Length: 194
Length: 79
Image: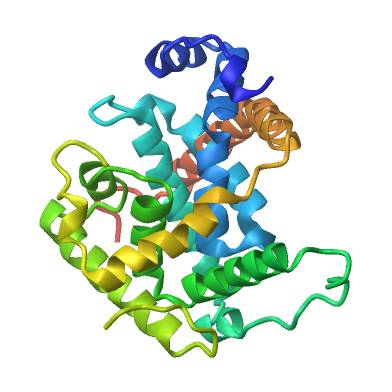
């Protein structure tokens, strides 16, 4: 069932029911939060491992549900688990950033005659931006993803990354600067003012 | 923008431009396969099913180890 159609039973109530053994309640929680978990996982570990990371994160959340104290929103707690699961995956695969930064070659099936130029241009910019985002150091990448792509508040990010609020703001600024520098070093002109 | 967050005009011109570029990614987010929910629930069912037997095996193994330790424990004060 699409997330929008789910009856809006609060997360806390679904958690309570899950703890009483109602697996359908946990299914609702997964359905409700799978979008953001998958998006964050994809942006941190890349598309190949994102599904495994998302699945692991939900399984860990299920087994640790009794430890959820409700001091932060369930989504925040879940994203904390997702972030840690993603970091473990990155550490395990020992993926070097350089393996992810190289701009992949143009896809062979892009037919410029069949696709409007504007759409081609948009896709190319998107692809290059994704590559540059993955080239960021992991800590900065997480900050940018949570703030600039997912729109989390500074306070939520502070909880997810277990980082003081002041550090979140300072490091986010540095993360943006680093991405701007990466884009400036790109052959593509991103028209970024000095 | 969330309450308590700094206003957008605190961004530098380059940051503002970057935010516009990032709209490209926000507009086309990666989407989770519908099977993800089913996979998670299958995983939960399977793990729940094996959890109790494994815990039982652990308890039995621990009891056996304790018994062996008692059997082979040197007598107190013995030389």
